[in-house]
Amino acid sequence: MSIEIKVPEMGESITEATIANWVKKEGERVEQDEVLVELETDKVTMEVPAPSAGVLQKINKKPGETVKIKEVIGIIDPSASAKSTPTSSTPSSTNTAPTNTTSATQNDTLPPAVRKLIDDNGLNPASISGSGKNGQITKEDVLNAIANKQSAQPAAAVSAAPVAAKSAPSPEIPKAVPAASRSNLPRENVVPMTKLRQTIANRLVAAQHNAALLTTFNEVDMSAVMDLRAKYKDKFKDAHNINLGFMSFFTKAVIGALKFVPAINAEIRGTDLVYKNYFDIGVAVGGPKGLVVPIVRDADLLSFAQVESEIARLANKVKDGKIDLSDMEGGTFTISNGGIYGSMMSTPILNPPQSGILGLHNIVKRAVVVNDQIVIRPMMYVALSYDHRVVDGKEAVTFLVKVKEAIEDPTRLLLEV
Figure 1 (cartoon, helix red, strand yellow):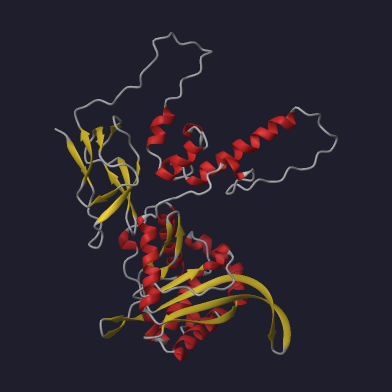
Figure 2 (cartoon, one colour):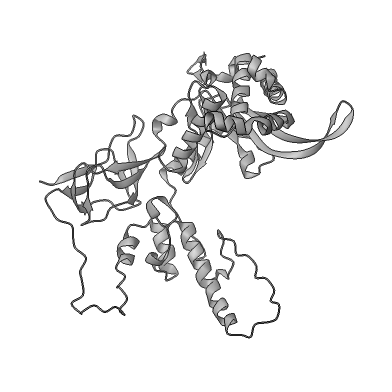
């Protein structure tokens, strides 16, 4: 008897998903609990395992199509045998190259935008190395293949010419952007927005429309934290098997500042102000499908090492596309570190219904005045965006000053002063 593959329930607020990728193909043998298909929702990417061993008899929905919860997207036949690859009746020879039969089937499972880019440029999917999940070919992989194909043609022509005594070094070709002429590329690539990207866009617009957003800035001398980190990072790694980064310092500094200014750890709920006595700190992480904010639960109860370990665990889940909806629900305050991308200054947008978000930026050596002397110090701009309906300007400035004091004198974090 055939077994239906249904879209599983993924949370109260999720009613539909998009087929991101079929890991298995029609006619292919699958084992129970083996991943069949990847679904993308407006919050997470989810893998759907096989409910039974057998053969994937039919795929009802292709990549890019929208499906409802509990909708049947495929059929497994537990009693069928997998299709065997047809062999040629011609006797094989050691000098005969094997026929490539993977390009067509591989092309069938590609996202529509990637498939179109491959077809438009006459590429063979089987010759492209996929850097995506489970070896999936991404748009960047195709662009790199196009660049390599175009650069190989002039290189072949040059190899026939006499070699000069000293040839000028060839310019390095960026991997992300083809360096050759764009004449062989389509003028535009139209890619449908994913459910996650649509939700990110809607939430950002809603945050600006529904909150009285304001941003205040300060600068932090990172010397003390950098010296402390350099002095103890090896011992810290040996003791806790995790690297000592800056995020644990800022997480602890934020918690101290939130305790001093409770309004920034509050939210508007209807006509009430809800002040929270727990500290679930969201840490914005850039993943392959966009920015997500997993939560470090009860961060005030964690040690430095536990904070670093939890952030690393959540970041790895985001990178691997394994982040769960439960990892991102709730949160009382968010920290976003744009400095890892080189940002000097920004005005971060709130993560509703939270009332505050701290933006961190890159560390740059600048001339500053200390005790009437001009000195060079590693400085970082920090920005607090907040909901002015909940937080007054004085409270916002006080919060940033408390963060600044804690980072510039990390002893305060141990003594909680």
